[in-house]
Image 1 (spheres, one colour):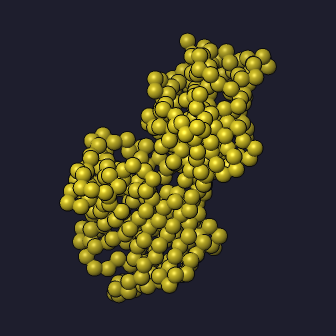
Image 2 (tube, helix red, strand yellow; image 1 turned 180 degrees about the vertical axis):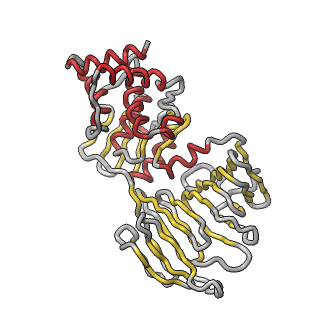
Image 3 (tube, one colour; image 1 turned 90 degrees about the vertical axis):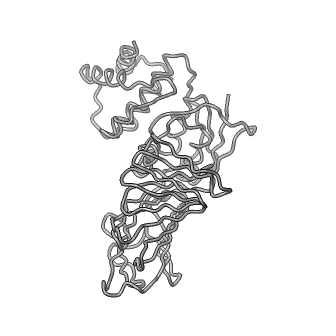
Length: 377
C-alpha cells in the first residue's frame, strides 16, 4: 500500500539511497520547513507515513482534504508536497526536475493598497505610519497596528458631510478596511472599493471592482448595497464574497451568513447561506443562476491565505496567479491544458512552488521575467 511506500521513501532518504527524483521530492518538503524540527526518527517516519496514507489524493487529483488546512495549514503543506509526489510516482505519472524552468523566481503578493481621498490626494498605505492618516468629510482615517485602515466618525450629530474615498489594490496586493459603520472589507488583488467616509441617508452603498469579502455590520434601518458592473447585492448584515473580475466569465456572489438579494436588470435572486449567485457579466437579461451547494471555502480561500481549487482548469488558475504574482500568462502554440486540478496551496508560496505543484497535471511551465509560459505535452 502507499502508506508503506511513503515510509520506504523516507527511510531511503535517511539512509542516503534515494534516486535524484526521490531526493528532490523529499527535499521539497524539507526546504519548506528547514527551520522546524524535522528529524526522521523511526517514530517520526511512522507518523508521517500514516498521515500521508490518510490524506493521499483521491481521483480528480484531490491533493489534500479541506479539513486538514483548517486544522493546521503548515501540516497540510507538508502533505501536499509529499502526498502529491508519492501518488504520481507510484502510479506511473511522469515527474522530472525540469517541470518548471526559471532563472529568477517571483515572490507572492502582500498587503499593499492606495487610498485616494475626496480631494484627490493619494496615500500609499504600505509605507504609511500607524495612527491617523487623514481627516476627510466627517471621518478620521487611521491605520491600525495590524495594518488595517479604520474610519471613525468625528461628530455623530452631523453625518451629512459626504466625501467619497477609494481604496485600490494593485496586482500582487490585498488589503483590509473597516468602514465608518463597522463593516469589514477585504480586497483581493487588482480590486477597488469606492465608499463614503460616513454613511448618511437611508442606505449604505459602495462600489467595487475585482473581488471583495464583506462582513457587514447589521443595521435594519440602512440596507447595505454593493454595486458592481452588472449587479447589485443588498444586505442588512451578513458575510459574503463577491468576485467581479472583468476577465472572469461570470460574477459570483457567495453567501456565508445571513441573507442577500442579488439584482441584475429586472432579475433578482435571494440567497441563503451556502448558495452562490452567478451573473453573466452584466450583459443581456439572462436569469441569475443560483448554485444551491456552493463551495464557500473555495470562494473565500484567498482571504485566508490560500489558493483553493476544485476541478479548476489550468486557465482559470493562471488568471488567479497572474493577479497575485503580477505576471502575464501565455500558452505555447496557443494550446491550453484541458486537465483540471483539485487542491490547496498557500498564497505565501513563491511562483515556482505553485507551478511545481501544478506540473503534476502534466503541464510544464517557464518563468521568463514577468511572464509565465504554459506548455502542454
